Image (cartoon, rainbow, N blue to C red):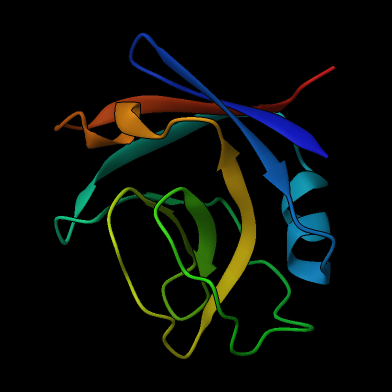
Length: 117
């Protein structure tokens, strides 16, 4: 499934993984009442209105900027724009298609996530 991620005047497209957490994430789309903010100098985060299933979670490889993940212990999305390493509780939901440079824009913004037709 392809999704659109919009914040400020920026739009990104992403492709979701085929795993239980990504399918659970896609179920309530569109999401319009979220915010996105900076965290740890390598990601932006956004808290979801509900927790996602953790079925099928576990270590994954090939971590890289542009990954869209769910951090189960806090119930938040993580949009990585710089290097990171897998940690317990992190589930890859998908990857940003093309460039992820807009994620480097500092600040807190309203966030919308919706399916792409």
